[in-house]
Length: 480
Image (cartoon, rainbow, N blue to C red; front, side, top):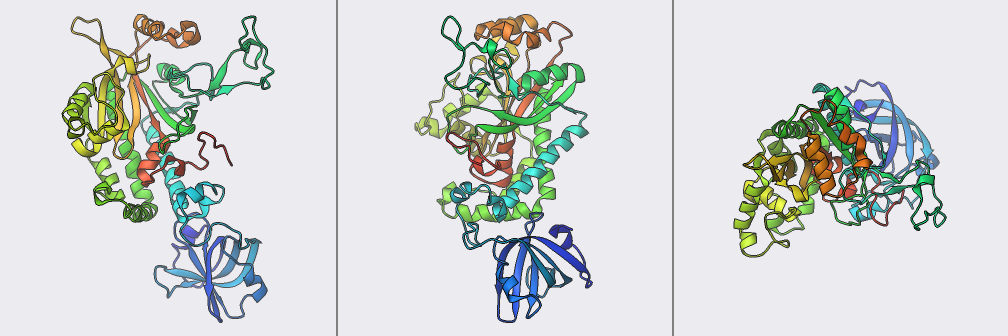
């Protein structure tokens, strides 16, 4: 039985076996208190060892970090903050931990714990973060199942660059410096394992669209990779993406789905992770005490989550957002690091101003300039019915995060899509299969991508994305 279940029991002198890792041990001459946790819940259970019940030599091996099994009687606890405790009758030490065990019962910096990622799960902070992460993942699958979506597994190894950014990790069986070359001196990928150049995927969207144009509603949830040399607190080289694609959806439908989706999973976390979220909220309060008053959050973590879950998101076009930014005090006083002008790719400082200062709620921006968006987004028509300068894109912006969702209505017209492909310099032969879906039963459809780690970052109140994924992959870091 897990500790979280034992803690719910009514004490009636029943025998229980507690298995877990020692968090702390303290005691006097005639009694010893051992706090044990198995990761199933934030709270520990206390085992009480009365004088002479357990051999002194065995007790010496029951140290912080040791894995133990304690057999004893469940009784009501007289101590504060706990309803039950175990009167120990037998202790088995599965694995001892000596004084070099680095996760001691004291406050460790998050930077230190990143260097101990193999052990940081045993701290209260990371136990809480990864229980919340699990709950959010479960809620995501639950939401889409209830909405009639099918879970589609798209390839991790791909020959297409969905984003067109070119920042991809190459997959090859060639030995370094021994790759065969063509007559022109380039690597001859026709001799490689797949017979062509391949990479780790940056998105499952293109393949997801193929599924949606037959199954109507699909979603992907898997790892994606970006070889971007960025060391910010918001970027990872390996991260998880949720990407729904829906046939017969337009931009408005897409926005409605995105908003209802994030509200659902946040409400689910509030309901099922109350204890962990309260702990993380208190951690955030202590962290923010080090900041100036004007940089501290106006809402507590839980209040912020409730506010997002219970209020409508603000919706406006990119053009309207640019007008707001141009009239803002930071722009007037030239306090933005990046200049504001129509046609720019909005930076995090611009997005956060709109969310945190102007509207003070999540924002959905739509109809971006086509020059800063991907080739597959449906173009808006101008007044004469010709392709206009904007596309039916949407970004969902969150406080403290900036963009958390990016999506669009997809171009479903074959002629318009192939013209756009050629315009941006993509060889149509490389995505012939994607283009062909617009020739056979094409239909309006839309979708988006949610970066899972950014969602976990928002819900947990953590400030560095490396702290919400078990083993972060970042430039110069592939440890563990």
